[in-house]
Length: 322
Ligand code: HEM
Ligand SMILES: *[C@@H]1O[C@H](CO)[C@@H](O)[C@H](O)[C@H]1NC(C)=O
Ligand SMILES: *[C@@H]1O[C@H](CO)[C@@H](O)[C@H](O)[C@H]1NC(C)=O
Ligand SMILES: *[C@@H]1O[C@H](CO)[C@@H](O)[C@H](O)[C@H]1NC(C)=O
Ligand SMILES: CC(=O)N[C@H]1CO[C@H](CO)[C@@H](O)[C@@H]1O
Image 1 (cartoon, rainbow, N blue to C red):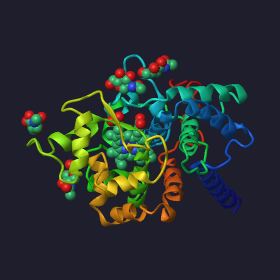
Image 2 (cartoon, rainbow, N blue to C red):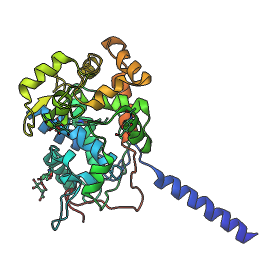
Image 3 (spheres, helix red, strand yellow):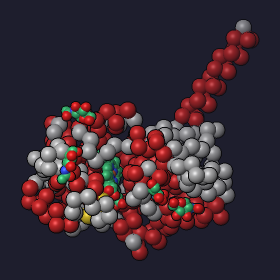
C-alpha cells in the first residue's frame, strides 16, 4: 500500500514536473531578472529610432528561428570551424540586425548574468521592433532555452520559399502546428521590409520557363518592377510594401488584393477561399482585425519547438554555444 502511495506520489510529481517544464510563460524572469522586458525594449528602441528599417529583419529573424528546430536561438549561431550554420543558408543571406540582439544580451549579462536566453531576447526584440514602428504589441511568454545546434541544410529544407503554392505553404505551416489562419495573418509581416529582385524575378521574366509572366500578378505592377529589377539581377532590393515599408499597417492585404503581392507565396493567399476571405476582410482599416490576429499568431509561432527545463543552455554570447 505504502509503495503504491509512493508510486502514485511519484507519478504525480513527474506529472507536475512535466507540466512545469512543458511551456513558456509570461513573467518567467519575474524573480530572476525583473527588468528584462524594460532592458530589451530600451535597447531595441535605441537602434530602431536611428534605423527604422531594422525592424523588418529583426521580425524575420524570429520567424526563421522558430521555423528551423523551433525557437531556440539557433538562427543566431555563427558557423564554427568552417562548419556552416543556418545563417549561411540562402534565405538567411539578407538577415541582419544581429548587433541588436548582442547589445541586449550584453546589457542583460550585466544585470542578471547567465539568466536570459538568446531565444527569449529574440522573441522580445521582434515584438518590440514591430510595436516601435506603429504595429501591435502582444505578451511574450518566456523561458525558452538555447539550442546547441545550427545546420545549414535544415534552414534550406524547413523554411517556406517565395515560390511556394498554397498547398505547400499550408503543409509547411501545418507541420509546425500553425493553421491556415496563422499563414494568412503571419504573411502580413510582409507589410514591412525589402526583398531582393531574385525572390520574385521569375514572375516577371520566366514564370514557366518559356520567358513568360505570372498571370496572377498585375501587369502594370510587373512593368513598374521591371524598371528596377533587370533579369538575373542578384543585388537590387525593392520595398515589399512601396510607400509604407517602414510602417507596420494593413497595406499588405491591399497589395495582395490588387494582385500586387511580391511573391508567388503572397499571391497564393488568393487561391484559397479561407485566406482570400481574410485578405478581403482586412481592406477596411476600421474593420481590420489584423493587429489583434498578428499578436495571437506571433505568440503561437513563438512556442514552436521551444526547449525548456533542463534542455539546451543559456548562452553567454548569442553567436556561440557555451
Ligand atoms: C509565408 C511564407 C513566407 C515566405 C515564403 C517568405 C519569404 C520571404 C522572402 C523571400 C523575403 C525577401 C528576402 C530577400 O529577398 O531579401 C522575405 C522578407 C521578409 N519576411 Fe518573409 N516569408 C514568409 C513568411 C514570413 C513571416 C511569417 C514573417 C514574420 C512574421 C515574415 C517577415 C518578413 C519580413 C519582415 C521581411 C523583410 C526583411 C527585410 O527587410 O530585411 N515573412 N520573406
Ligand atoms: C558572426 O558572423 C557575423 C556574420 O557572418 C559577423 O559579422 C560577426 O562578426 C560574427 N560574430 C562574432 C562574434 O564573431
Ligand atoms: C504545389 O507545389 C507542389 C510542389 O512544387 C506541387 O507538387 C503541387 O502540384 C502544387 N499544387 C498545386 C495545386 O499547384
Ligand atoms: C527561362 O527558363 C528556361 C528553363 O529553365 C531556360 O531554359 C531559359 O534560358 C530561361 N530564359 C530566360 C530568358 O532566362
Ligand atoms: C548574416 C549572415 O551570417 N549572412 C551569411 C549568409 O550566408 C553567406 C554565405 O552563403 C555568408 O557569406 C553570410 O555572412
